[in-house]
Image 1 (spheres, one colour):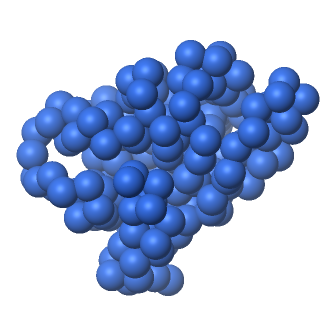
Image 2: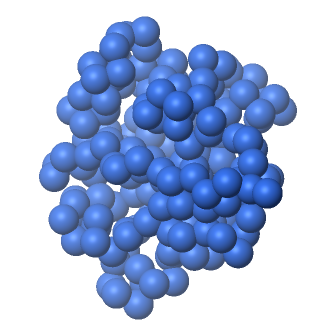
Image 3: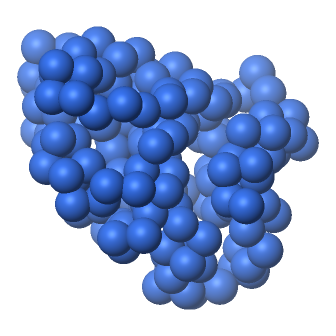
Length: 172
């Protein structure tokens, strides 16, 4: 039987302009209570390369660097049932999305949402975006290659290039 897992609170400050969304933290992240804690996940090295901080710095320093760059970090799902870490194992009927209308009401400068992988993008577009449109929120949503080690179809170099192409212009 699949266990119910819960996401973390967002990492954000009021000046955030970009919101990066995962789907749901994996087992390693849930155990560490840190976003993207799996050592093979390319998220932190990619963010470090784009934002200019040390990918091996303490978690608090890395999250501070994201906030300083105007980046917020969260997940599409507040909770779901899933065995293990794979998005493919999420029980679709169990998904509870996060409160994006509430988040965006207090983070009014967010205009771009970057979805870390296909599942985050699909679930955001299907479960969240229609409600946001009816509430008057206007966002540009970008699907980027997953930084997860499960996304073996793209090299870390290719992932970095794709993320840099979209994210870097949003940070100037």
